[in-house]
Image: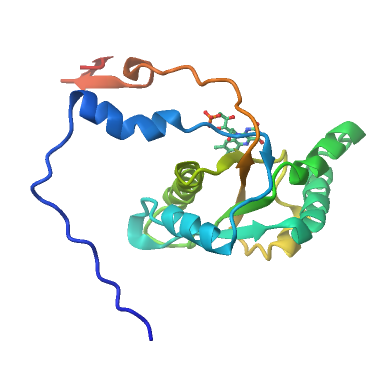
Length: 215
Ligand SMILES: Cc1cc2nc3c(=O)[nH]c(=O)nc-3n(C[C@H](O)[C@H](O)[C@H](O)COP(=O)(O)O)c2cc1C
């Protein structure tokens, strides 16, 4: 028997936070750290399902869900590594052997990899770039969800993520694009701390008809 989906009640009495309560609420975003060193165990099927469902809440113009994930565990890594090397060879002729080895080694860095494929709907009134942006948001959602759940996660990519072999392996349709993958596993170390960013470094304000400092 399937249970009908009941949307949660929205609390209209809730007021925006400020001061210390605001900072505390946002702390998990500040605390998120990508994890390059990852060991087993990675998320099991139930845990991964929960992370992917959370990722799929990403902002999405037209609710097109213009992306798909491909989960790669141990038994898929050899094929993925070979296809990534082929993609690099095809796109970058003359690639040195060390660079090829580095690409092949990318599949050895985590117990679980989740490839993120943007699947924009061609000819839709929502422009393709917006759909790819929605897919990117889902990638961040997956990284954040994993971090909140206690896993280590990091978004990775390779110098080329198209080409004949990868297209065949991932059954990429025309217009689909691999945006990289999210490595998931158990943290075994902590990387360098991120430098805190002041809002004024990333934002200006439009005051009348002129851009100026953030207000
Ligand atoms: C599309 C995309 C591809 C990325 N590819 C790589 C990569 O191949 N190698 C890498 O070290 N970091 C890569 N990163 C950056 C890391 O995921 C991470 O964000 C960065 O190391 C900063 O760490 P932080 O997330 O803890 O701030 C990529 C990020 C994005 C969004």
